[in-house]
Amino acid sequence: MASESSVRHIFATNLKWYMDKHHMNQNELAARTGASIGAVSNWLNEINEPRSGMLYKLTEIFECNPSDLLEDKTKSPSSKENGPSAEDEGPSAEDEGPSAEDEGISPIKRDALDRIMRASDDEARMLMDILVAWQKNKNPAGKGGADD
Image (tube, rainbow, N blue to C red; front, side, top):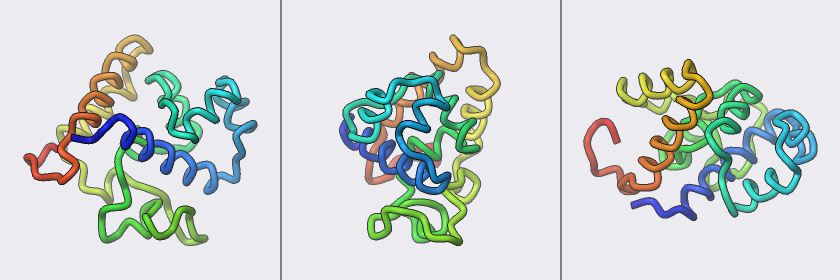
């Protein structure tokens, strides 16, 4: 199972990658999201992760999917092209960023993410809480079924 600290680490790594890609510092991200500078610092320092409504704002700012911020993009062979890797903490000029399509997300996950993006704030919060809980409990070795 993925621990809470590993989920926070994955989120912080992906958030840093997107901030670098968009040439954004903590103060700018705080201003764009309406979060406090302390909250942004806590995300980046792996102290906590944002709630679903804030995660939605981040996906709008960075033009990405929630999975691009929540899932580990460093384990696939093509991760250099799609986002942060263990060897390369930041993007190179040709990087496109993590992509749900490139990572082979199952139709069930894609449908869930699409529903979250179309949901009301309360529904999105509930669905994101479910997604985060699922991510925390996911088998890190990826030995589960096709929808893991």
